[in-house]
Structure formats: C-alpha cells, structure tokens
Amino acid sequence: MTITDKRRGAGILCHISSLPNEYGIGSLGKEAYEFVDILKKNNVRYWQVLPLQQTGFGDSPYQSVCCTSGNPYFIDIEGLKREGLLDDEELEGAKMPAGDVDFEALYEKRYALLRRAYARFNIRDAKFVEFIESGEFEDYALFMSLKSRYGVAFNHFPDSYKYKENLAMYEFRNAVYRSEYCFWMFLQYTFKRQWKALKDYANANGVYIIGDIPLYVAYDSSDVWARPELFAVDEDLKPVKVAGVPPDYFSKSGQLWGNPLYNWDAMRAENFDWWVNRIARAKEMYDVIRIDHFRGLDRYYSIDADAYNAMDGEWLVCPGRELFSEIRKRLGKIDIIAEDLGVMDEGVELLRTQTGFPGMNVLMFAFDGEEDNSYLPENIKENSVTYTGTHDNDTALGFLEKMTDKQFTEFKKRLRKAMKGQGIYLPIVDRRDAAKALWMSALHTRSYLAVIPVQDIIGLDNSARMNVPAVPDGNWKFRLESMPPRNAMAELKNQIRASGRD
Image 1: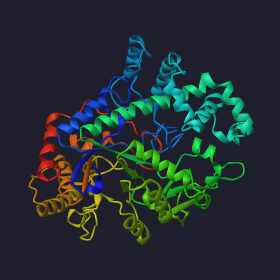
Image 2 (image 1 turned 120 degrees about the vertical axis):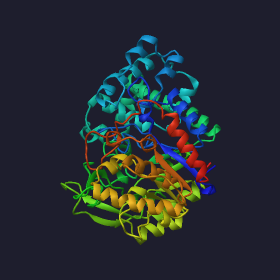
Image 3 (image 1 turned 45 degrees about the vertical axis):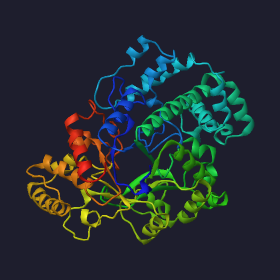
C-alpha cells in the first residue's frame, strides 16, 4: 500500500515524542503500539512522524548529530527492563511529570539510565557484533565518543581528531571501545531493533509510516565531520555558506538556519552516493518519505556564514533532476512527498512534475479571499497531500483564536462556501466549530491523502503548538496528556468514511 497507488487515504501527524507515558517523552514502547491500534480501529491508514534522528542543540528533530541516527530518547526503557538491562527501581526513578517535554531534565536522567542498561549488555552478542561490523554507524559512534570526551563542537577537537586522521582515530577507537564507542553503537542498535518491530506491527495492521527527512544536516554533526568535502566549509572546517530562507509569512527578516550548504559539485562527482545512501536508509525506515523544504533541491538560498539574518542571500541552482534520476536508477520507485510550501516558482513546479511526487496543501493558508489560491479546496489537485497545518503552523484552533472578530467572520464565510461546494454541512458558530470544519474540509478534498495533526482532531489551542519557525526556544515540547479520546476519533472515522478514505 502506497500513496502512489492513488487510493484515497487519511493520516494523523503525531511525533513519537508527543505520545503520553510516565517517562517524560513518548517512546517506541506500549504507547506507540496503542496508537497504532487506535489508528487501525478508526480507518486511519497513515501515521506521519517528524524526523526520528538524535537531536542536538535546541532539541529540534531538524538539527541532528547524525542524519541517519535514531533518537535514544525514544528507546522503550520498559523493553530494556524486559531484557534484563534495567530493574524496577531504575524504571521508577525514570518517571517524570506529565505535560510538555522537559529536555534539560530528560538529558540529565535518560543518558545516565541508558548507560546503566548498557553496562549490563553483552557487547559480544553475535547480532550486535554483526551490527558494529556493518559499519553503518562507525562515524556516528566515533563522533559521539569524541563529543563525550571534549564536550565541544567538532571544529574545536584536537586537530588529529578534527581532521579525522586515520591513525589517531584507530588509536582513539581502541582506547574508548568499551566505555564510549560501543555505548553509542548500543543505542543505535537498540533503537533500530525497536523501530523495526513497531513498523512491522503497524504495517501488519494496515498502518503505514510517513517519515520526514530534513533537507540539510546540522553543522556539528558526524555527517559534516566525516565528509567535510561534501559541504560548504573552508580549510579550517568552518562554514562558508549556510542555509535559510528569505523573508516570508513566518519571518520578516527571513530564517537563518545556519546549516552548511552542500557542495553539489562534489556530490555530483560521486554520483550523489551520499544522498542515495541517505534515501536508501530512509526507505528502509519508512513507507513514505517526506522531504522537508523540497524547493531547495531545485534552487537553494545561500547566505554568508557571518550574516546576521537571511535578508541578503542569493538563489543558486541545485542539480535536483540529476539527483532524483540517480536515486530512481539505483533504488527503484520510492514514495516521496515534496514539501513544496512557501514561495514556489516554475523550476520547483517542473521538478515536482518530472519526479511525479505529490506536493502539499495547507488549508490555513486557503481562505484569504483570492479565488486563485491553490490551497482552496476547489483548486486542490489529486496528486497532493492536504493538511490543516503542519508542525510549523499553529494548531487550527490557535490560528483561529488569533483572528479579530471581523477577520473570523470573513474566514467563516469563505470556509462555509468551500464546504458547501464539497457537500459538507456543519454549523459554524464559534472558532471551535471552524477548527473542526477545517479538518473535515481537508478530508473531503481531492487529494489522494489528507493528514490531520493530532492537536486538531482533539481541538487543542495554541498551547499545543509544536514549533514556531525562527524562534529558537520553547519548541518541540508538546505532549498528549492521554491518547486521543474515543469521541474525537469516532468523529474522525465517520468523516473518513464520508469522504471515501476508508
């Protein structure tokens, strides 16, 4: 079952971190399996998650220490107890208050707990040895071992480590093999096993995973450290050009992300091996891959590394067509969603058309009074995915509550008109009604797939927002207090059936 089968489907956007449990952050444990059961029961065929990578500074899933890693926070610690690696007292000590994720407290507690589990793990286990010898996480484990020792960004490592000199790395690996290197390997080994078990369970129950990969990687990452020649860095390994976007809906001064740009000439010289391998790993992890900021694979915004904001960058051409041609040649057909939001141009549209990837629609942007707005339900095309909003938007209710009464009156009028054209009847009196009407309208569009954030199904306000772009603090913390209530899911199920998506 895939999106490109062109069978109408419905999905829910809920990151692993947002699932409820007693341990401060959602995991790959029983709560994830319960969530799959809820999706199956209510005819929701897709579960969309945010990037599963190990987060770095700022706790953003879009900034990782390794772009193919798994987040150790998501490891099911109850599963570790069942394996004899943790005891009841240690699990009890791992409990944290309900509510938003407290990343600072989590960092202090969770890694100490995982090290205790590792201390009881048999590193001579045949499957673990095979995992290490595959080399998949060699650079990651070395990088994290160095980070543990020096506690600084990699460009401040001693030069022999900074430049990854072979003899120095061989000696370092031997020196920290058991204390650090195998610990970081253990985390990825455990995550990978637990994720595979969860994904297999979801697939067996007719639920398919939409995974998200960021376009860029973090500067202070094993990706840049291991292959600096593939990135826009100088001889001292400092960034020269960085990523971002010019002024837009979210920020008047643009967004200065700070990720180092790719050296596309070097990528092309290697037949895009780095990207092909990255997509291959994503294909293994997910049923469908959403590529964030897809427009950056047609043209990308280049900003001087010492700039204070993103207002003075320049657009440069990316060999996206060559890249996807090589990916398809070597990996075959892959289900990919192109996150094509923001200011699009003919080049991006042409690339998306050539690849055949579905683009995205956001209904929050639809009702501005312009009849040619491409996000209006009547203008939405089949080969697309429709959302009420994404992780970068406010919740539907939060979005509506910020409107003045006059603005809301106009919004209601336009929304009612669209719903009438879709054959939907729902009285819209207040903002809660309108928030519900938005996700109903999304389901009734012509898109092959409609994905609703879990916050909108429940009707949560601005306090449940996941991320505010260009704001560095306070993001990625939202957690459900409990699983979505039965009445909300029953309403969703009814609309899934009414819209022909079951």
